[in-house]
Length: 254
Image (cartoon, rainbow, N blue to C red; front, side, top):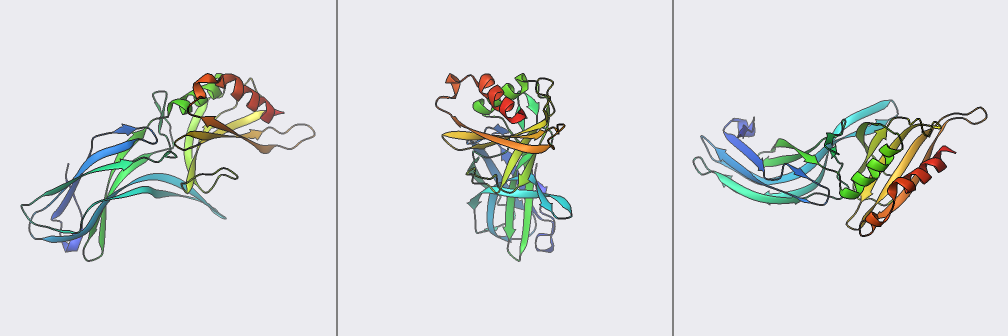
């Protein structure tokens, strides 16, 4: 459906439509689509049209936190050009999804708290910048699916996921944010109040960061504990990940 770019050069005559051919992807896969533009009553000078991925990320401040639409993976599509009445234009695109893109689906379930969308940006001459946003599903990679299932097999119940602006200490990654997938406590490991899992993937593998809230004991205060595992995509099927995750969780719970 065409959407009017409200306020473009003081008129409502310019419209844009973005159609995604791939409504769902996995990290590292391309998103394909087409952008169509038209105007009704007078020519409009367009400096450029681009697509980008966005996600909603938390930024922490001293006095609280704020949710921000954070853009990543930008791609110019076409422009500059003059859009003329009765002469619509369209441009196809293929936007590669970064390996660290937050996932929004796992095991047929939406991960509450995380959303990813394709945003079309239109730079109109005169300083006006319009945007059209289309949500897209990002499914877990097979190794991510296996690791999350291994965590659930130890009794941790999936709660929600969020994206945080910042860096993970001592782990290389490219994007200015990271996703945390939160699980509630497990009766099998009562020493842990909750567990958060972060995936930081690249073309060859991924880091799996396990961060747990350790329960306070009689002579020890509660604290956060962390561990990280490197997973090789080429050999991950040869590993018993339920056993490996269990060993790491028991170490965190000590």
